[in-house]
Length: 422
Image 1 (cartoon, rainbow, N blue to C red):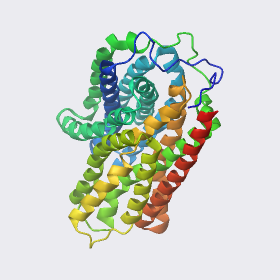
Image 2 (cartoon, helix red, strand yellow; image 1 turned 90 degrees about the horizontal axis):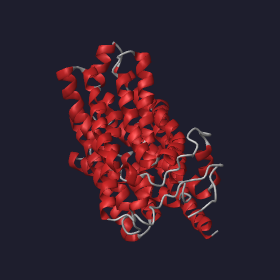
Image 3 (cartoon, one colour; image 1 turned 135 degrees about the vertical axis):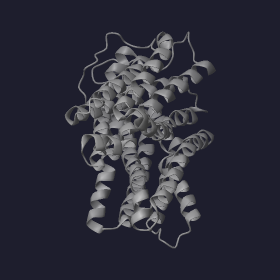
Image 4 (cartoon, rainbow, N blue to C red; image 1 turned 90 degrees about the vertical axis):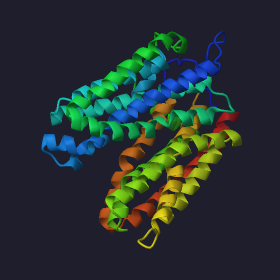
């Protein structure tokens, strides 16, 4: 792991625990629990509006399709905060930064509650800002309490918060919107965030003991990105994340539409196929973490995952009306294991190869590039569909991106070995 003496002019905090407070099982369980809960709430907050899009659109007098842009705006906010959060982690600590992300999520939902489209644009970005704030500090915290034998499993368990948040949003938000109106439901995230913030507060001193009170908070927002771009290992690793994220979001975005429009399934049956993808994502995130720890190689597992994504994307382009329903369900479950299950292992490796003392800073830059795939992947694939008139073509593009991600991963792996030896 590269260990530069400084990071863009600001001294960095050590990410290892103090010698007099070595982390044990208790610290591990506490950090995993709270970082997972923060991620679950963050995921739920970003997916809350999409889960009640028809009710929001009807009240605002707009097309439900336009509500979908809220997700895009949220990720714009997430990309911005991922570049800025490094300074917060250094000055206030990773624990306090995680708490602050909860506050930003609540602020975003309060603004969304206004029901004015102009303000809702701001609220969507603010919600995304809170979402982007919670990953770099969590990586810093987790990296302090893991061991080489469990790091991938620990990171992967934490990343189950994303699908769990999605499930909660889809189950809770619609029924609450019917009972109380969609605007009143926006108070849920704020209330839960306040409870979680308070529960975390007694542990702040223990986990923020390495913070630097004099560190600069507002700094060049692109310093973390430059840190990534200067490292060949991090640069190509981040590009791997971009490719994999584009495939993941495109699978989630186009599965139902492809099965309805090109295979002739009903919306309900196609929804079952998508649920197979989501369930597989939860199982895959934990399972791949276990495999990576057993093999003692995150990159080897990511190469396997990328190769599986490539083959699955090529196979998806061949799905037709002649396929049995159960076969399609099994196929999309297998596709989801790879395409939605890679995030935890990816985060673990990103933290491992980041410069010592600058994990929050470096991973922010990595996530900025990864979020680019989330933001632009489905858009590019939609444009490809408009040109070709076939969803099969979009899955061929997914296969190409997944394969390219594997190539980038191989380059990153070799570069990491070189940088470690220096």
